[in-house]
Image (cartoon, rainbow, N blue to C red):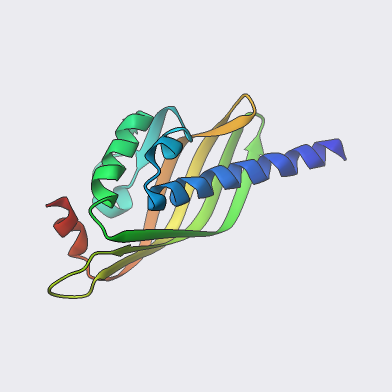
Length: 153
């Protein structure tokens, strides 16, 4: 029974770490977000932007996200259906996402919404789980798809 309890605690901690990534990004709490990541992170948003996955430091990730997300009036990244697989000091978490981005627009709708799945890789570091890989697989989008270009300037 103790092994089952430990597994449940780890699964909860992994899912909460992944959820905190979305919450801290939406709240623009960059220092808290930065603390969730390992020293190097594989970031894969190729389903949205094309290109290749990149290897970034936490500061590079939060700096990029701060520049992008702060251009919106607000964002809300909702996560559901977390599934966590543990393998010793490694974990993989998947979850469905629904991300809404709002920017007052003089022409067109003020919302751009995406949905799909996230997959995180995490490694245990002491009593914490740190994110070392993020794959965002967008499967649908709706609304004003011109908003990201407006935010980018």
